[in-house]
Length: 163
Image 1: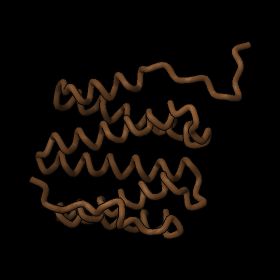
Image 2 (image 1 turned 180 degrees about the vertical axis):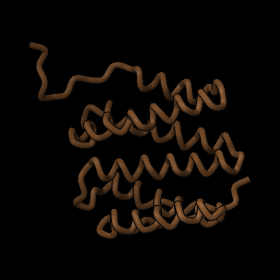
Image 3 (image 1 turned 135 degrees about the vertical axis):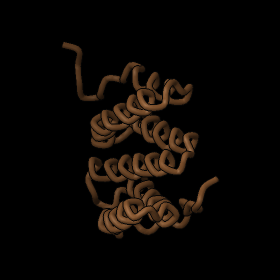
Image 4 (image 1 turned 45 degrees about the horizontal axis):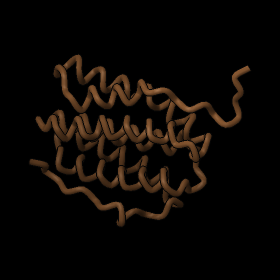
């Protein structure tokens, strides 16, 4: 059972508060986790996730790379926290959710090219996290499905030609 409740996406701050607020919450969450205060860490990570999702959706004038880094770091920290709490299903949900979100961005034929490139770069981190999970905990169907999602062919970028 979770020891904290997540914030809703509707509670998202304006993108203008953006990365500075995300960084502050994430640092406080990491400090809480290091001190063993998992309830506070989880609450702060959930608040960070709300901001990261808001940045992904609305930009706030921040680079695609920074916006996706906030999302990936938050989801990976949440996965680590859930592993520490012996909540493997929640950990897997965060790992797979992060990777699948990036793969969906990469494959979106109408997507922003900067977001697609950043998603491709950050998918290396989520791919490595999924492989590490398999190595440590063994086979898991959702993890295997997420990894397969990363092996699907990518659409050619609109600006590239084959010759």
